[in-house]
Length: 379
Image 1 (cartoon, rainbow, N blue to C red):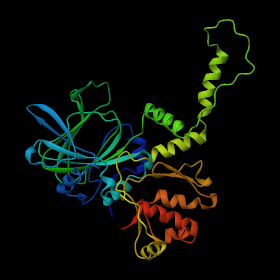
Image 2 (tube, rainbow, N blue to C red; image 1 turned 90 degrees about the vertical axis):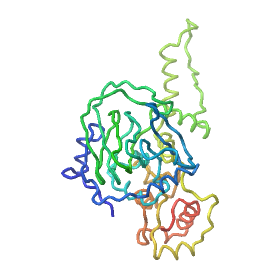
Image 3 (cartoon, rainbow, N blue to C red; image 1 turned 180 degrees about the vertical axis):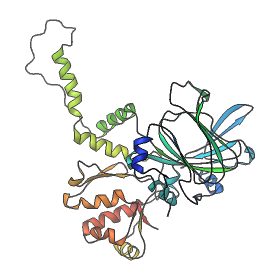
């Protein structure tokens, strides 16, 4: 079982001293770290049109980026290019073990695991990210330079590549297999491969307020909410026809703010935060497994949650039986709220853990529905 070693730090120490504050090199954060897939398997994933991937390389001192799916890589040669594949955790179940190691950060912040394969000299150039990332070095070696947070000028080295100007390093390090580099948002950095290598980047991010407001507007429209108009039966005599006086301004502001009550915000954000940004490895057609299949398998196997499937609950409403799966709000009877912790807090479920569900016909049927959708499966 993969275990994270922060050396002299505890997870609480890391959050207090480094999280979103300063970068950190964690030597041998993973002992005897092994790649979760081979370069050929990663290249095969990038041939699938459901998988988000890109190749970055330099040619004649110019940067280039191409987006998958890819049919061949032969033209690229043996140096100077990188293959990057997003959300590999959605397609390779074993990577869930890597994500589990960082669960001292809540899953609602988790973005995905990007896996990159690079030939000697390969990289994506100096750039700045707006998310937190733990770059876990797999096979091979890669040199990383990280600069300090500040006012750095960015420019488009290619329509698909935003680079930053030259920066002074506060970290200049060669990562070996099992080493981890943590980089907070807005710290410029650049990685260049020394020898053929694989990297596994565990990313955490939040949406901007602009993105959230845009999605909220869609939610209000889709659910036909917030249709009430301003009412003012006690309006006073107006003298200046062109003015929005302070009383009217308060009416307008209250109309907007009163819409955003706790129930609406939790319903919207629960659905929004459990939507996967990338495709999931779901079946093309719904399965037709029955309870016989369920009870036969659970005797010997664990039930595994699909990689990339997002399940979340709010502390304020979990006791009411409310939680969220894959962009959908689920409401259970309050007496069943304890199973929400099982489903959302655990990636795999044993027979003993599932007994509270299997002893209830309604909950068993509900679990079977999710299995038939491909949300959970037997290993």
